[in-house]
Every structure is written in structure tokens, then in C-alpha cells.
Amino acid sequence: MNKTSRVSQLYKTSLILSTTFLLLNALSGCASAPIAAPTPYKAATVKSSYGYSSKKVSESDYVVLFKATDKTPADLVQQYALHRAAEIAEKQNFSHLEIVKTNVEKKPQLAREVVASNEPPQAFQNTQCTMSGCEEVAQPMAGATSNDIVKTQINDVYYTITVKMANSAASLGKKAFSARSVLETPLKRKK
Image 1 (tube, rainbow, N blue to C red):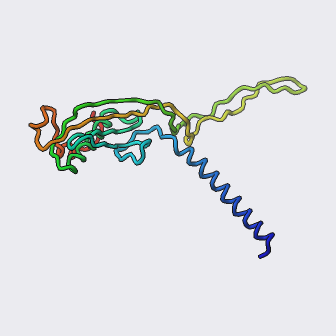
Image 2 (cartoon, rainbow, N blue to C red):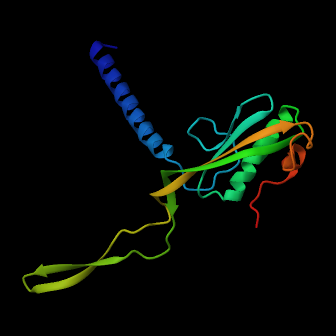
Image 3 (cartoon, one colour):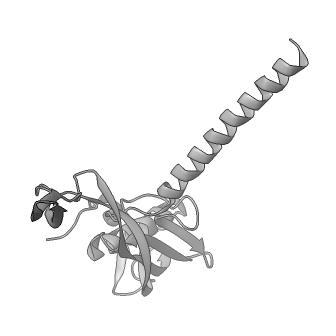
């Protein structure tokens, strides 16, 4: 292979790599915006992601955070945080827990939302003039289709509970939960 063909091959390879990088970068920019949909029960993999996270404050005290979109019902967000606290209690060999403090914060966020529309496209009126005169002409206007993704304003909900854990309900107080009974209760919206 001569020097000219090697340079040509390197140029083609770098062009393909650059194009691929730009395409992946553009796609990741779209994917970084949250989706305006309910948040499922899951671990938050990084600080900015949705789901649960926790922090040990002392041997028996933990702070549990569940970050969700405001499309997630409030009672479900509360269940998620309590469920996570019960998982921690069992893992740390505690049988009971009590919520000592709760806090809710909401922060506005731009999110992606899929817009579905079954309506026909709207028409707008336009005047067209020729030598023989002017007349109104209706032209179709592009409207939302079932595949359109739009940006919408939502709130990120940060629901935090501080829990105290122990091996008996008596050592906590009247509002103590059994970790086992919390874990046996299905995670679903209350009616």
C-alpha cells in the first residue's frame, strides 16, 4: 500500500469516527432529558437519576430519599421510600422502624413527553394571487402526530424520610412499622 492510499484510508476512517461520535453525542443529548412519566421502584444509579438512595447517619438511623417525577402518585412515592427503609432494616438485622422526619421538595425540570393526537392536520388560509385575480387557498399545516416528542415542564419530587431502626416496636414508639409487614405489602397505588 502506497503512502497516498494510506493517507486516504486514514482520512476515511477519521471521517467515519467523527460522524459516529457526533451522532452518538446528539442522541445522548436527547436521552439525558428525563421522561415525563411515573418513576418505577428502582435504585438511583447516579446522583441525578430517579429512584431511591440512602445514607447511614448512625448505627440505627438512616436517611432514605426517593426522587421521582411529579407524574408519580404521591402515595406511591411514600410507599417506595418506606419500602426501601424496610429493606435496609432487614439487611441491617432490625425488625422494626419508625419514620422520625419527612421532607418533600419540588424542583422544576424540562422533560420529554410523547404527544399522541388522532386529529387531522389543521389547515391555514393563504391568499394566492395571479394575473386573473386573488383567491384563498387552504394548505395543510403540520401538526402533532402520535410519534411527536415535545419538551414539557415537570417537577422533580425529592421525598426524604429519616428513619430510626430497632429490634422491637416498644423501643421506638407508637408509630413503629414491622419491616417484614412493610416488605410483604405490594407496592401499588392506593385508591
